[in-house]
Image (cartoon, rainbow, N blue to C red; front, side, top):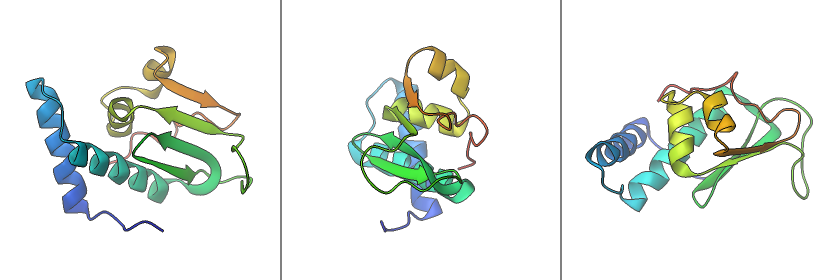
Length: 122
């Protein structure tokens, strides 16, 4: 299992990404990676399980939500999005439904709607 991201480090990276966005600059890759992984970690803590794989390439992926366990190949329930979209929906800046309708979330499977478990509270 990956090293757990400390709450202070996670919040600091998230603040750095938000500050870069607010100033119209590109966030540091390390801050972006830490912020994405931290929010994935919080989702895993909030909704543990193995029935939905949430992917935020190239930074991370996590299996969450109680249900049938998946062990080989592509999971039947997959959610994938870019880092900016993940940060927006995970923190509540943008509702899940809005990002999904806009086509920025690629979700497949009967359990691939995360609106019941988002936002997480960083």
